[in-house]
Length: 97
Ligand SMILES: [Zn+2]
Image (tube, rainbow, N blue to C red; front, side, top):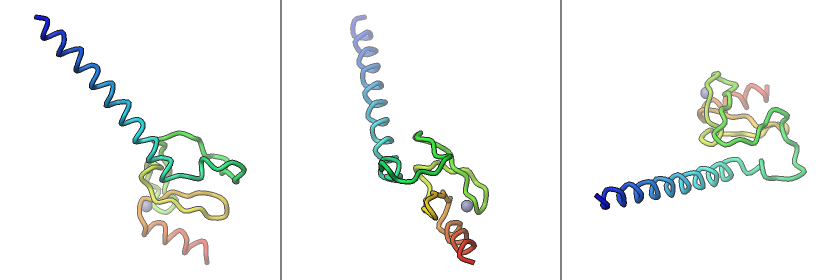
C-alpha cells in the first residue's frame, strides 16, 4: 500500500525535474540560435517579440517555422527566418537584384 504512494510521489518528482531540465535546455538553445536578442543597444526589428518557441514566417515560401529551429539571416538590421537554405538564398538573391 505505502509502496504505491512512494512510487507515485517519485514519479511526480521525476516528471517535474524532467520538465525543468527540458525548459532550461530549450532556453539555452534559443539563446544559441538567436544571440542577438541579448545584445543591448543593437537595432531590434520592431516586430521581434522576446518569446521562445515563436513562429516566424518564411518570406520566400510563406511557411511558418519555429524561430529556434529556422535558418536566420540579418539583412539591413532586420532578421529574417527561413525554412531552408534554398529559401534563404532565393531571398538574398532577390534583394541583391
Ligand atoms: Zn521556405
